[in-house]
Amino acid sequence: MGNFRNWLSSNMLFRNILADFGSRSAYTGEPGGFITYFQYKIGPYQRDHHLYFPKEPFAVRYNNEVFNKLFEYSGEDIFKYLDFHFDAFPEKNAFILYLDRQLTERLKKSLSKERKIKLESAADWVAEKKRLFRAEAELTREDISRDLQLVIDSKAAGKVDEAQQRLDNLTDKLEHKFEDAISRLESASSLLPTGSIGLNNQNHQDKLVQLLYLLQNLHNPKNRTEALFSSFSNINLAAILRHHFRDFADKKSNTIEKKAKASIAKLKNTDPKVQKLIQALEEFFYA
Image (cartoon, rainbow, N blue to C red; front, side, top):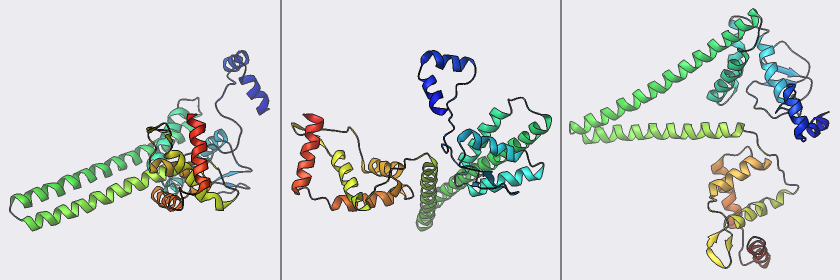
């Protein structure tokens, strides 16, 4: 059925007909393709907060089950259900954004009075979380402003040592905030759909990194100032490995960069095989 629908969608006439009858969709019945904001298990249904599916769900079925499960609860139990999944999900802002957007769309649909009340309760839960996040952000700004003013006041009073100590403390606090932000970004990044490329032979991992390095540094042999890429940093190289190769998917960017440097260090440019590879790449791109 899926292949037949793909065939119909490949024809402009049938594609428009599908759209006119409301049968055209960007979603498929292929399993996966969604971020697991709400935890789920494959197996028989159980009366707990997890979602349950007989087999790996596809995106639409997963999103619908999030709310079908919510409709089982009422009152305080709705908040307990949402808290259960919220507490388990690493990137809190992303969870709130997902739920907020889903609720906005679903509340516009024709619903029974009971279901609408339950979705509105979930929307109240989202609003409360947003308020707490805003309050936390405001408190952080107030703390930093206060600490900075204390540094200025100490300096103005001639208390140089005290001012320096306060400045050091503020610097440590800001560095901690920066590291926390980086950690949050990496957590969010890890939630994005990633490739699942795997090597059949793990002994080739070094050579894979070395090949990317050679491409990263490839130049026109007739004009050495002309690089293949206008920009391709080591951070980019690490990102390619992290987001597209299974062996690197669970590692942090700085760890991957260190592993990549170790692999590159093993590369011997004087090796005839390496020289032949570089020449072949130059001929492929520039001949």
